[in-house]
Amino acid sequence: MNRRQMLIGSAIGAAGAALPLIAGRSAEASGPMSHELLESLQACTPSDALTRLQEGNARFAKAWAAAGSAGTAQQRMQKLNDIWENNCQIDPHALAQGQKPFAALLSCADSRVDPSWMFACGSGELFQVRSAGNTAFDDAVASLEYAVSVLGVPLVLVMGHSGCGAVKAAMASAPLTPLLEKLVTPIRASLQSRDDLSLAVQGNARYAAGQLSARSEVLKGAVDGGKLKIRSAYFDIGSARVTLL
Image 1 (cartoon, one colour):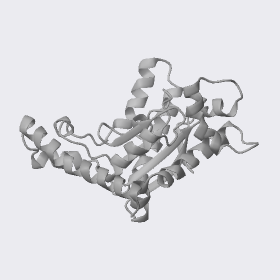
Image 2: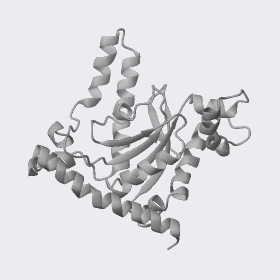
Image 3: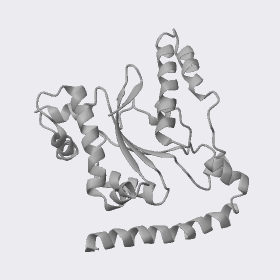
């Protein structure tokens, strides 16, 4: 084991050791979690995380199309609310004491891209990391390490979307601020000549997904051990459909 692996292992071990202390203090404040609350926390965990996301997106895309033909804002919201029918909802009292998300998302911060909506998921179901361009930046990788090693998330989905402004900026030659230049640098590393914006967004999502296990021993170990799947996807805002890449 090299020094880097030892440090990572020590950090995760420390985080794991700290969790019982945190949980204990929470229990002192709110009382131990009952069997019923624990069951509620796990009630929305599907047998296959990726299938659940695909099914939820199919429901959302149908409601999105219906909302597009509605005449008023109230009618549009009524159509969109159809995605919550017969949906799993975790007891808020259980959420106040813990979380058990069934998937993690690395997606863009674009206001039109809301993973909870597009996958018809409620509070406590998705662990979300969002930033313009959905790149594998340091804090994103660290957050996903926590989701996998501590929360036990079995799936990480990296998702780009149509019309992504960050990818568009990376493809252009216009001058950017120093921080924006830093943001688009990993996107530019994924670009291929002659790609249009749609293909560039998809390439960026695939590249970011590959970077997760390449830059993190924790995530790579989980993948190699069969405990984690990392996939990439593309969300088309017009149709509201998510396509796996």
